[in-house]
Image 1 (spheres, rainbow, N blue to C red):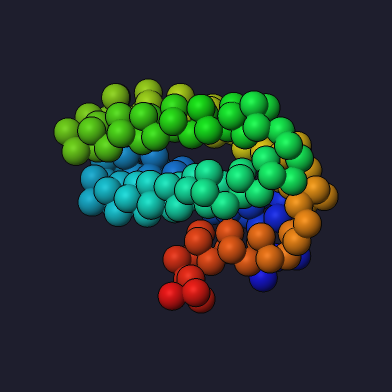
Image 2 (cartoon, rainbow, N blue to C red; image 1 turned 60 degrees about the vertical axis):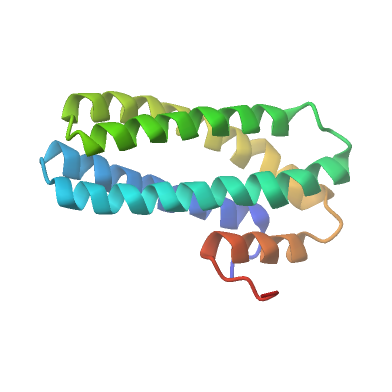
Length: 152
């Protein structure tokens, strides 16, 4: 297990990026079966990551800092933009529309890079420093992102 919230969450960002790039490469190669497989993996991992932030990490950050109208509100808004772009990508993939897919994927990549930078440089380190039990929080986030929940 990673030793800190910033390390784990940054590693998850990189994993998502790699799968996302693999899907785009498959689209560029007109390998639609591989594109569908890798994109579906990306979409699933991204949604688990966004949920872990929205349902576990952000509420803990807000409770520990008292900041509810700041960075977490901005991040939630960007998550909604990402979900809308994933829906556009899904439609383009289903229609085998390479041009539409590449256009939406470039937009999503820029959004994710900017979003991830804000989280990695500010939100995750602040969360690690300010929440009362960062190790317990990391365990909950890890379980959610990997689909293993020991409380079941």
